[in-house]
Image (cartoon, rainbow, N blue to C red):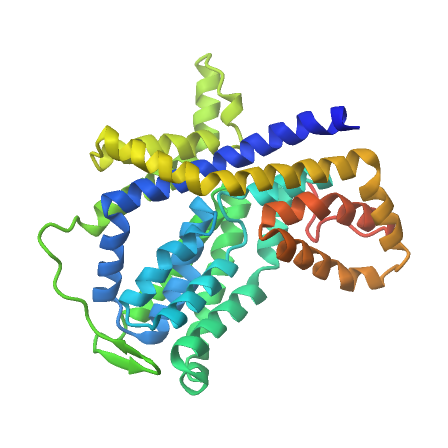
Amino acid sequence: MLQAAVPDALALGAEVGAIMLGGVLLYELMRRAGAYRTVGAWLAREVADPAGRLLLMTLGVAPFVESVTGFGVGAVVTYPLFVQMGFAPQEAGILALLGLVAVPCGALAPGTLVASKLAGVSFQSLGEASAALSLPVFLICGGAAMVVGMGWRQASRQTGKLLIAAASLWGGIWLANRFAGTPPAGALGSLAGIGAGLVMGRASRDPLRTRGSTWERAAPRPEEEMPVVRALVPYVALVGLLVMSPGVVSLAAKMGWSLEAAAGSSLPWLWATCGFASLWFRLSLRTVAAALREALARWAPAALTTVLFVLLGNVMRVSGMAMALAEEASELRWGYLALAPWVGALGGFITGSNTGANAMFAAAQAGAAVRLGYPRLTSRER
């Protein structure tokens, strides 16, 4: 049994772990270059409207960063930005976590990849289905962020802005899944949320005061601070590579070069971006080495846990445990459909990871759906 489960688990776990490490390394490189500090100062200067700021961060910046890097980095990046914007530490922590919850496919979607492999469904179709069902999550997270940051009364007056921001993020992520593929969908779709937040946030340029937080313009940009466009170039490069990757693979095949390993995978492009960021910011070898050491220290515990969960999921599938669970679940008949989301939520609570939750329960959930005669996806399978 283990001989059948281990090879597949190690192969899948290695790919997922390498994606996670690349994302954390990119964060460390950009942090050491001062890119996040630059972006935070720019946001504090340019975006004055409280509701716009909250929605920009919760339904824009946090989903973008987490979609690219994963590993909770979206909250790590946005927490100091919320503090810089005038929120108390406790408020900033809650807001950063709400932004993290709003992410449908962090770290270029390895959790979705695991679920598609174990459930035997199309990676692309699963990404589209997940995106289509995400609107309620965006509304809840954005609304909760406004209540935390502004209070019930002021938040209720900004419902229109919440609807615009949530719909922008939802539409952007679904369209990106549909036309650009699942790995870059979170990052590309989050750009729509960022755009909506910027437009609404810049509608008012006067300092405003909200419950428990003072909103003031930041000091003028120091001369030594890099331009915000320069700070964002590595992210732009990564998104561009992910979008163009199918064309690059096809062109390479016509020229006689084999890049099949890069087809449908975000892994090579993410690591290429790490190398580009090192050169773009002119980081020394010592700085890059320090970033790699820190990234490895952050990554190792989560990577080991993820691989073990993937192994557990494969053992459950190969041994018949997943099918046995599916048979028991199917005894509930259509009542199981109401229970299924809570099973997934339990997996997320136990593992603290979308990837880990899918590794544990994706095969069993898919098996139960088949036995009930219900499609494994809510959208048409391809």
